[in-house]
Image (cartoon, rainbow, N blue to C red; front, side):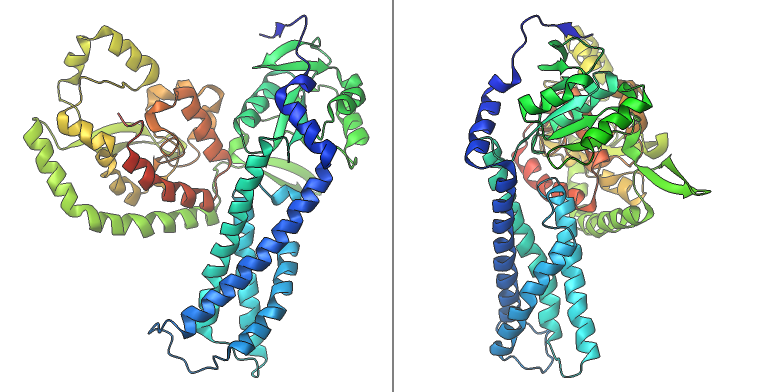
Length: 503
């Protein structure tokens, strides 16, 4: 329940807000973004130029045998071509929204748009070469330009993003925000937004006409006043984002009033939740039926195209890994049988997509009489019931501890991936008993396949709390993209080598 604070802390007096005021006094938020866009354009020009140059040297100077066509390699021609292509590429980036604030610094969407822009640009050059026979460009150069230019621009933007993340610690590129609505949905929104550390939103509190100012609603976030005081709150705290929890505003007229007052404002951006926060993970579709716009809830998180990309990624990595690790499978099986009696493979019954149960394969890492061993340790038994993990588990065998440290016990789950029961990357798999621990999120978790690896694996594994695991799973499901899967897949080997949090 809400806790009333008689002398509540003024958000303006927090250290970060003071830094924001110092930052905006020297350079306004709009000016900060203008400067950033200038650097972004310069970065794109530089990285694209380097990419085109690298593609030229690989094509004509690296003696790659697959490129055997006979075409002009006059570097002056390619320099002139790049001179004309670079501004066109910037225009294409602009058309694709790559200089719009809403697509910058917020996640994987930016890289996805870079990839699409580069692909369209390369296809444009190919089409032009077909239409004009006088325009002859080495196919090898074009093929190399595609991945190199994408990687170059992505790396450049990634580097700039890290600079901005660092500047946010000093008050730059931050937007003060309030949530209109202090009900359960408003607090859930606060929990989700507060956990997104790099969003650039600085939540200052809530606005709710039913809650007295100074009432603590979530963490250190307080009620700042009522909806009728919005003008004063926006002015006083320099608010740039209004987040409307629609289920908290029962009056439709009140919602319309908020949008009429602030929806077209150039100083304040209004975001409205769906009012269906518990099930929004699967996504919403707005479509017309009999000329009436309706909002429908998607039954699965991933679309058919998403599923196809995830399928290709899973099989493209799983099949080579199985071929590579087969000798290790045999060696691990022998070590397990030599270490203790019992089966080599342990089958764990877990929940799959849409609630369908399946057996997840793992190398056995525990003694077969594990329950008897645990009965001798009541405190550990209680800890297991609460956290579903034990840091010092007496049931684990010697070889089992080694397998767990480097996640080798999970290698047989590659067969679960082949059977389409799991994915290489996804939420942490859970048992039927754990579903209740996801509270209002349980309807969301099973909309995608569980993964061998995931955000929890590359963020500390068992060292993070169960509540943090739930939040990471929900973040993954809500923000899934093939680029997020690739990012996690690339981080997984290093997380395994470190062995941090594995037990």
